[in-house]
Each structure stands twice: as structure tokens, then as C-alpha cells.
Length: 345
Image 1 (cartoon, one colour):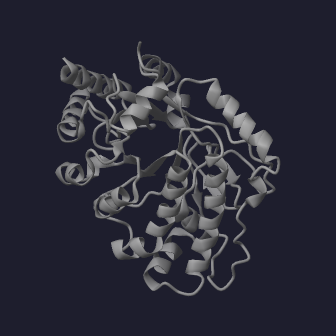
Image 2 (cartoon, one colour):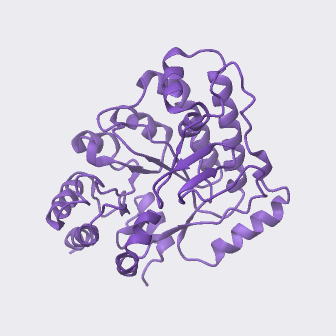
């Protein structure tokens, strides 16, 4: 009997010999809106083996607008995003904490966490029972990005360098809220919990790795330990070159990494992490998916040479952005299937 999508993903993440490669295709609304037929065709041929549970949260007193619509969007923390590109995410232009001396804008959204926890858990569990896919929690902890949203990116970078008073206070408040949020999801039947922080430029980590290890590694340790204590898989997304902290993520026991491996040295990446965590795909969105199908074939074969193992540890995944060539995306996914078939013959 063929393995279910949930079984395929779980066996992939535990290196327990799935009977095929797992699949997950993300798409920005900008792609879906501008190329609906292409999107439908891709998803029909390559349905996802995972999905995200809806969040049964209580109402927010801050939330307004649509994060993907042109104009103003206010999130649950009160951060105001300005968007000039429909289908994309906007940017925070005016931070809530412009000066470290005034933390009045620091208001973690505890109001979201369900007061009727039993009913909320039952709602999530019903969703999990009614699907055979691997289910991620409907939350998105992002401590570094949240810090930037609250302080502004330039201020945040200076804070990491100068380490002035109240930097630790802000980080502690962010961490405490996200741990509480993760603890709620750990009481449900979801399979995994995902968090994200874009940590790299195309060349290196955005901050000193020593600072990252001092300030942020303990935060991610709390996230991962919380997940594992409840039997959940821990998933992290980061764009950019994060070679410098990849050994730390392996040490922390991260299960799944959705990383921008196209801007990293694959030999180094394989030496550090192959067989220790699962690479949740990623096809270079700038240098490959916008180019010819042949570029996709070459990229997939190179990644496979370094990271593929039929026992598990890799998922065929990519993101459909507004500039992506649909045929190139399809070629990449088909090439992964070809790699997998050849290895199993």
C-alpha cells in the first residue's frame, strides 16, 4: 500500500525510507493572481504533501487590512506595513519603538491566544483528523524579523552591534510570547511547527555570528526543545547565506530547514547537515526559476549530487514568485522525480 502524504513526510524527516520524494510548492498571491492557469496546472501535477492548520485564535484589537493588498496593513502586534505591490508583502516604514528608551509600543498580542483552549484544540485536532497530509501549526514565530518590525531594520542592525539597554528586554518579550504560542500548538495534533527568520544576505549572515549565538541561539533552542518535548517536528525557514550558523542549527536538533541553498557552498552544507536534518527543497528564485528549463535541470542535479538520499532528508519544494517561469518550475519538479526514480531502480 502506498504511503500517505503524512507518512511520506514523516519518513522523510526521520530518514526512514519514504517510498517517494515529498512535495511542497509555495506561491505568492502575485503569481496566483497573474497566472491562475499556470498555478492550477502546477498544483494539479504536484499536489502538496503538507498543509497548515487554520489558527483558532481570539480576535485582535490591532489587526486591519490585507497583508497582500496595496495600501496599509496593521498586524497583530500593531506594526504598520505599507504595500505598493499587490500580491507581495509590504514594509514597515514607521517602527513602533523608534527609541530604545520608550517601550510603550511593545505589546505582544496575548489577546490572540484562545481563552477557550479546549475548544480551540478540538478545532485543530478535527482539521488534522480530516486530512492525510502532514500538518504544520498555523503560527509563524519570527523573533529576528519581529524585532526589525518593532524597531526598524536600520535600528535593529545598530542594536545588534551596540547592545544598548532594553535590547534584551525587547527580545525577551518577543520570545516569551512566541514560546506561549508554540506551547498552545504543542497541545494539538499537528505534526510540526514552523518558524522563520531571514538571517542571511546573499554572501553572509546579517549580523556577527557570535552575536547570533549569544542572543538568538537560546531563543531557537527554546522553540525546538518545546516542539520535541511534545513530539512535534521543528521547521525553520531562512533566506540568505547561513553557512556560519548551520552547525548551530544542527546542534540544536532542528528537523527541517527551508534554506536558500543556492547561495551557499553545497559541499560545505552537505558536510555539515546531510543526514542530520531535512532540506525542504528550495530552487534558486533569482538565478534559476527565472531562467530556462535547462537551468532548472542543472540546478536540481547539482543539489541532488550533494544532498539527495533515498532514505530521506530532502523534499522537492520551490516558491512561485511573480517573475518565475512556469515551465522552468515544472521542469525542476519533474527533474526531482526523475532523480528519485533513477535512485530507486
